[in-house]
Image (cartoon, rainbow, N blue to C red; front, side, top):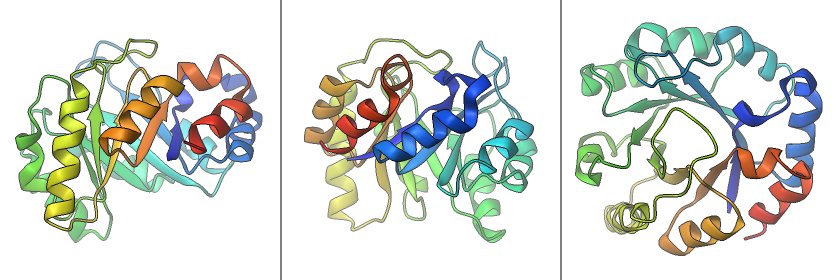
Length: 213
């Protein structure tokens, strides 16, 4: 299991140390939650914090753009050092046009679907996607409980991606702890994002427990 710690729950005053602990535990990448206070009811990091995180690690940085207008800002995050912009199919933009633009500019992308969004909504964008992020909580806040119905969507995505031999990894974000990560793994997930579980205890140990699943 690949693990992508969500930095939103880390002790930001000790950013470099927190990232180092995650790497020691076997983190494969880092998940950066970007919220604008409009698309979701919370406000978080901007490009400057992404730039600071990039100075702490060479690991892949995925930016989860929970934005009303991701097309306006994704370049700012890529220029700050992010590697993979994750775009919600629910964003009020022409998703196909935006993702095509990202590809034409030489970058990769991931697509995100909320708990209430059927898997079929992601299908038009999966052929060239590097990652499909299945939200197992409603985006906006960490510490929520895992939505069990997400398992059906993970299985559906696994079946479709394998059948069509696509390269997209399946990532799950929301309510991830050791128990729910096992459920996601068994359903076909490749990557789990964890925030509260990792950073509320021994960071290195908890990343390691997830990574060894």
